[in-house]
Length: 413
Image 1 (tube, rainbow, N blue to C red):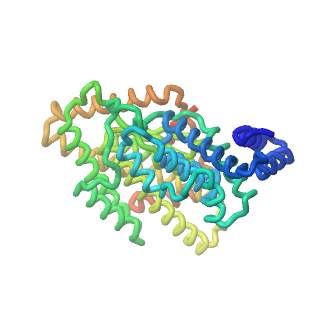
Image 2 (spheres, rainbow, N blue to C red):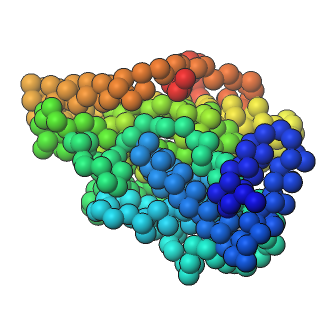
Image 3 (cartoon, helix red, strand yellow):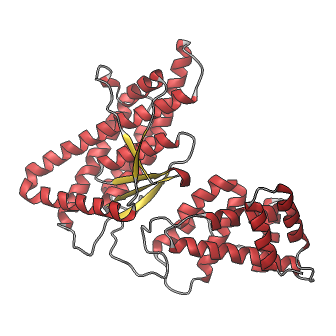
């Protein structure tokens, strides 16, 4: 009779294949277990042990808890993804050395904690917790294992637990206590809540001006970065629907804040590289602008129906969001340019420009190191009305402007 590890391996191989009947038979064998009195407990322990091993491998190869939690929720759904969260918690429990605070922060945000009594009873306890039978629980565990073990290595943005720091600069994240960031959050909250597009644009523009000024102040304080320092990075979720439009928005916000962005469509995220203050700005703005863009799109649907010009279509929505992203990007870059000119007048070009140039070059070098095979892809506009409405929603005051420039999204090969 195969042992628990072998039974898990057989079930995993069958689930990965195309023979549905074979997969069902292997899951039935997992139900039976090893034939011993504690066979079910041995299977449960083997499944969790293998999930934890997969999480450990992914941690060494660039996957942070938030990345894995986001992708698991996308591919497995809210219930089965909880098994991946539990594996993250078990992995943290088993770590012997020091753990970076940001790692624990992400686990806390995911709600990852060891809530079960013993690993041998984990899956049984989980099935009771979510209200499913054992066969369904086994299927969910094997599906979770297939996802975890099938993920590729990605760029290592931060040293994981057990790996010493390598001089990569990191920000405090959007939860930092900066007074400037508090003011930005307040402005963006107002922009999200207002029903007047022009007011939302003005508030967002003001937020960008504050962000740009803060970025310049941080650059001047740091001076020219030491050779041992490198820009850091973060990942923004760009899952369907309209993943391309979300990635375009991330790229536009990143470009306005001296960062570089690469979209990994297959994995559902965009990687943004930059210096800490700039990364904080990108994360804050992207989150807020997604809300604003969605609100504007829904408002556009209502106006469209009122005019009797048609029902909602995917092409209309996607064109709307693409146009919104491009026009907002123009406004953000204009605000950054204004802040740059004012700062240059105050600090002197001989002091500021070399610092900004050096930092920009460091970001590009980091991009080339982590993503040597990036390619550019064009986004196609399929609905002229959606494009026009999205542009108007992003900039009501510029209806008479010329056609929007063609843009590309940088993606991972």
